[in-house]
Image (cartoon, rainbow, N blue to C red; front, side, top):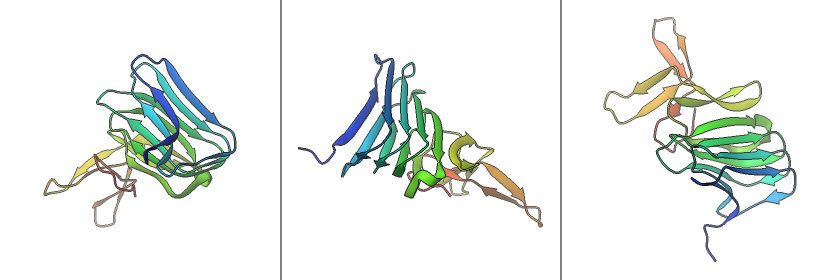
Amino acid sequence: GTDMAYAIDNLTNTGAQKAETVVNGGKVISEYRAIRQFANSTTGENILTINGGEVSYVWMQSANAYANLAATHVEGGTVEQIRISGNNAVLDLDVKASCLGENGVWGTMPTGKVLKEVEGYYTLVDAIAKIVAADNTTTYYASSATVLDNGDLEFTGKAWANHDGLNT
């Protein structure tokens, strides 16, 4: 056995045209990661839809430097956490906020995108700014900004660039 077992491995590779998994109920549990959504194709769609049931962990993995196609939709059930590892992924994300557990959606978002809750669903939106710290150690993207009374800009909806930290 291995401690790196997936209950479901939803895999697209260069030859696969489409990989689609639909969870309508039951439990998908693993000590490692319950579902790996391995997006590894720029032509084949990798689709995960959760309409019901209980899922402990979804890992959306874009494994290379190409624009890999992936879609993650959560409309029902409970998903404890969704981790995104997809700097270059073309990711369609539509996750009902009330279905998420305490760990939520986190990870490295596709370049230039930030996670935002819109009308009860988490989705990816285009960033309006890329912010780099003065010492060049920290970079993040922001989805919105507010002009403060003193004229400064306050950026919100931040997503770290190339960093496995939580979005704020």
